Length: 445
Ligand code: SF4
Image 1 (cartoon, rainbow, N blue to C red):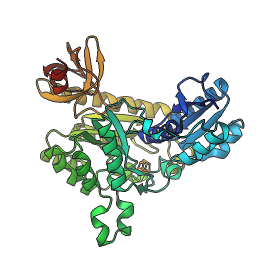
Image 2 (cartoon, rainbow, N blue to C red; image 1 turned 90 degrees about the vertical axis):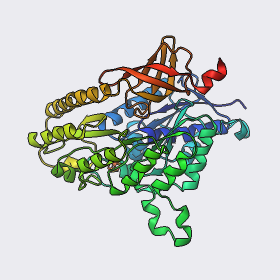
Image 3 (cartoon, helix red, strand yellow; image 1 turned 45 degrees about the vertical axis):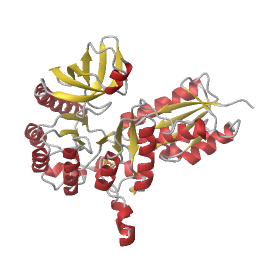
Image 4 (tube, protein in one colour; image 1 turned 135 degrees about the vertical axis):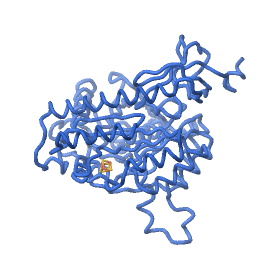
């Protein structure tokens, strides 16, 4: 029996990427060949996203293309929760499963293309199959979400919060670090809620083993890799993480999706921690950890958002002086509660507000980046080029923030750490010169 080849398309957020990695790891473990070409594949798996309408459209397009080019397609992921609709639209699909359902995906693969031989688990890399470069990896610490943000359908797609056991997270992280990962990107729907679901189940005897974000991040920090937190809501207990950043256990970086600043809009959005004084919290975090980088995302043009409420958000940005910001013009998602809110805004208004917000933030970002000129940083190299290297410091997360370009450093290789001095900046990126060789470079010399 010959080895079957599986085509794989991975769409969506880092949480979906982790699901893809788990399926790919299982496929490889069972001896399947994974291909990025439709023509070579015996069948194609499409891991879809259903977060916003543009993501739904992209997923539908990927399914259409896979069916046209190959014809044997399994759909998984967030859009898979709308199985009936998908099967009506694409009756030729082999199977449709929801997110985090690797067993169902594998069962569909087995039915179509049984594995050719016994698994050779020992041939797998210790960290499993990764879609990220070898030197960084996403680490998903929980699934699902207990919130009910009115613009979001993730809880209905992915279910309620289920935190992974700390021992399982640490074992995965240790395997990744042993496989060469130098940066762990902690992700979930709500990282600050990690462990909240298990509190009621814990007896005093098991207290030391309970899922707790501070304990988990401290233990992750002891593995020797960079640890970066994404999707952290501004709850008071997040303050406990700041000392870990000052001590060097955790990168001084927080990705806090504030989404808005006006209290009425935040209440309409039903945002977690919407009653907190976020400016005061930002100020106290920066006071305790002056090197802290803050990233956030915002939604503008939410139903009923007035010009004054939007301008309050612009004022918040000026006061908060966030380092990195992403912005979305509100877009209704099928099934979201916000669709029923009165006074939806025209698309042109939503998009214009998005552009205005990004223009305000571009100036803030440029000023903040300019202040880094002359300072020295340890950076992690992502790419090597003939002219030098592309790297990131603690202040830049891959894929969402800017980069540090190091000219005249052609010997750097991806995954290496280097010491650099910042020499220039624009609104997003920095340029730098190499200050000192890394231990890896000295070994190669
Ligand atoms: S916190 Fe809100 S936006 Fe994030 S996944 Fe949960 S419901 Fe959706």
